[in-house]
Amino acid sequence: MVFKIGVLKERADGEHRVAATPETVKKFIALGAEFAVESGAGETASVSDQAYADAGATLGDRAATLAGADIVLGVQGADPATLAGIKPGAWLVAGMNPFVERTRVDGYAGLGIDALAMEFMPRITRAQSMDILSSQSNLAGYKSVLDAAAEYGRAFPMMMTAAGTISAARAFIMGVGVAGLQAIATARRLGAQVSATDVRSATREQIQSLGAKPIFVENVAGIEGEGSGGYATEMSEEYQKAQAELVSSHIAKQDIVITTALIPGRAAPRLITDAQIATMRPGSVIIDLAVESGGNVEGSIAGEVVIRHGVKIVGHRNVPSRLAADASALFARNLYNFLSAFWDKDAGRPVLPEDDEITQAIRLTQGGKVVNARLLG
Image 1 (cartoon, helix red, strand yellow):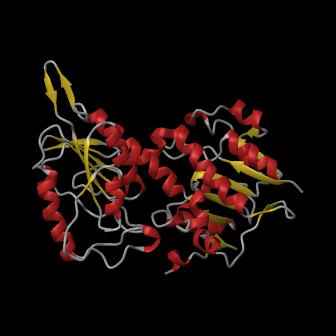
Image 2 (image 1 turned 60 degrees about the vertical axis):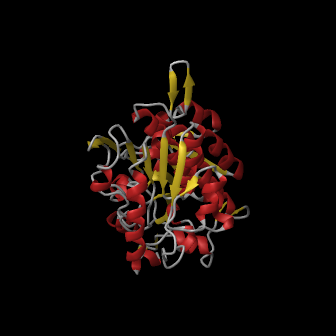
Image 3 (image 1 turned 30 degrees about the horizontal axis):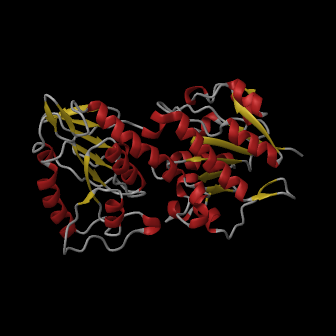
């Protein structure tokens, strides 16, 4: 019996990515799978229906794509109401945003499907190539600097001309995870003077290795630990106070500030207050990459560019989707790397061992129930 994988067209507002590319379609077919793509799924990511057909996929409407599918791939978890006809026991593999979309997770359980949340992928060596958060954050960090350059009314690099010298822009990156590191590298390539900070002391050397200046609170305990999987956890009150004082003095001298701090399952920490924004010179730009999780910046609004005290605060939604073609290519490879790693040649399909830490981390629903410990605790 042929194993079928289906790819849906994304329906969320502002979502331009797609969960499979012709490259990954060919690879799945080489494993022995049949592949179906909802017509128009790749249009906003610069992938035509013909390109999918040339790769060996069949094109059809949503019902045809879902009919008989053993695995359904998506960028964002589809609304359960749009999955009519999906067969019980099928896998839905996508970014699920489970803490925010808990009702949707319950809907998947009601459909009797196995929902697998790719953003819950554990940060372990063998899962690095499956990590959608890293691949998408990398692009978000890059794009954040381009967005800052577009909004900033001055040049980034120092320019020496016959008419005089233009000083380099000063850029401050707050939060040095994957997005922050890429933002540092990109701002440096554009010629800015770059500084960066993080609550995790281990990032100091990473900042320096990219040619930026580390800005750290000294002699104050930051956080209880580095956080599971390399994420930061919430800061102590003492550290928050010390950091606020340090940031206040530093941020007043900056032209560009990019904030990237996120805590999984929690609201984004507030890093910049309105009073601090008021100390920046008019024309400065702040990019809040955490705006959809509550925001690092007081006054930032998801989906808008607002001006406070003469400072532009940019809160674009779904930043990776603003680079849809590359973001889709990386996301699709993450999904292929995951499923192919568990592919059982004899069974002709992927098999997830119950005792595997990846299985336990990403499986949200099974057998009509919500089974993920992070959602039950």
